Image 1 (cartoon, rainbow, N blue to C red):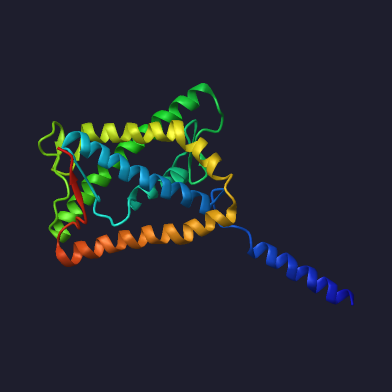
Image 2 (cartoon, rainbow, N blue to C red):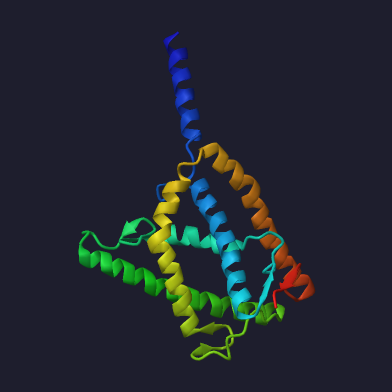
Length: 224
């Protein structure tokens, strides 16, 4: 009888361990997924805002859904590589052992520099990749000063990097705190439905690139 009870308790303990949510450096994966979905929409909105002001056009940004999934990856990259603005951590390992005013300043400077470098290298690499592999020229910065090939520019990298750092500095922690108030099951359902659709949309865009050798433009509106 005691052995049976012991086995039952062990089974319950095992089932509870199996139900533990997947976490990334201490934060539940689904909540980071919700933030990624939100940032995907913000990225789509931001790109169209810039295009509306600069050229008077808004469009689908090559996606069927109003989300740019690539922006969502920033959430996971920031969480893994940067930690928090005032406490720089690389994959959970804190760079500065003591939290002082100097360490906080250096953490923010380090985050800003790395973000600018990531933006520069990502645009340079992806732009040339699409060009060489698919023959697609998705953007052209060659008319701007301090451009490096047509796909990357120092000024734009500093601008985009500053924007990323500003979001990281002002919005990341409050947004994560707000999102974690969401019911876990609801967050999981959203990630397993809308999240999967966004990923499928991104894959479909890649297929369009490969087959038709051009960026899919599902709709476009001229505002002028």
